Image 1 (cartoon, helix red, strand yellow):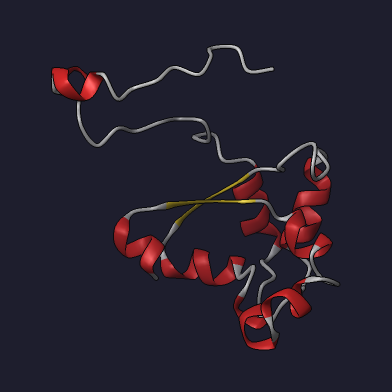
Image 2 (cartoon, one colour):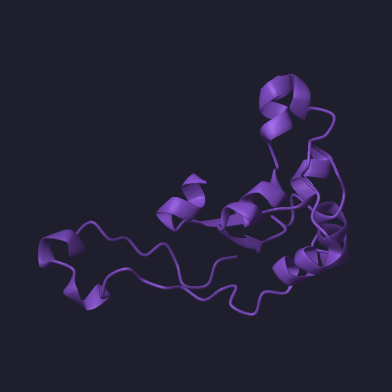
Length: 121
């Protein structure tokens, strides 16, 4: 609910729920594990949800992500195929919306900006 209330976009990696299914309960404990990877809860709350793969840690294959969104890993986490497909094919992914006009940044704050690179390898 906090994601929706604050207007935060949740960029989820659907395959994490599958790959963490063996180590997750031990790492998080049973109660936290049951609340983790709750894709359906995020969507139901009204939060903006987009999907990624976290490649090369996870597979880049979108069909694997679609499968993992539709597979019940944790309590109530699975989404219906239509909703999962919509999350995996959102045409607005990659669109950045700024809260303020970047041309209005105070000159003093410009010194704090750092460009790490324009062509990440």
